[in-house]
Length: 343
Ligand code: CA
Image (cartoon, rainbow, N blue to C red; front, side):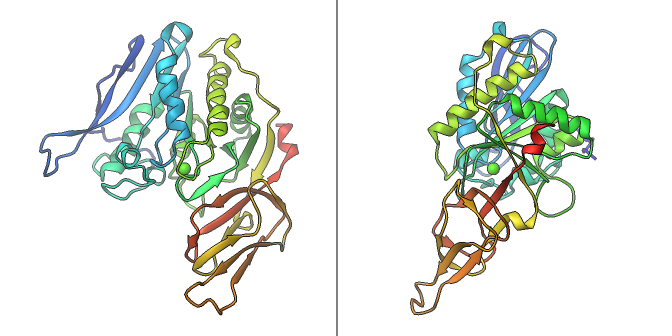
């Protein structure tokens, strides 16, 4: 259940007012260098009368940049007169992490996307999660959390959603994902492991709100191709929900629909060392195929460890840094799922 206690955080903007407002959500943080100071989380609200609300979020992981650039551009280009309803932009949702260019917050080392529904009396990142859960998600008809691979991974640029036991809800989510007109999409079974989904999207779904995500490149940089895909996708999503008019739709390409399932889709390092990828992003691979060799230059005479793919599929993501330790995710796959196209 979502925490019912009120947030200590407060917004400088009025979410119910028409027009374009910019400002900060204040997260009070009393520290040695600033006794009464606050952490300024930037927020933009663009509203024009009654209508649907889209909550667009990036910087949930601070080292993922295509989404942050997308929302920066949207903050400047989108005007109230162009829309019906409301768009809320939260480009640096985990502000301390985004400022540091890190996945997790340098203040409490918490990963915002594993902190939902959050805690109003918890650590800094837990307070941010709680504010988004209790103050922003309830305003929204659709939530789009923009990700990429971060410092340690690179993706084939893709948009994504999770499966849902409520098939009517899943179908509406699928239609929204297709509206993005991205070249590649995947439907995922959910987070790693079992238990409550602690992601921002997972919290939105718990509240009955449609949630989409994306994985736009990564490797700790901005990928121009991925940026183009997601800027177009966000516009098309706003058309799909009725915030922008049909004339604002930007033609995309047919979306290749894929599926990401459980453990056999993932390849992990079985030893530490320097890993040598034996396939590249986008390659089609077979069960049993060699995925990587892990070398130990410390003992160069030792044979490398080998890891293999457990199933057929396409290489959707790969690890970026050359050093690896046992347990790192080196690759994960997706599989074509044309039957999902039928919805
Ligand atoms: Ca991410």
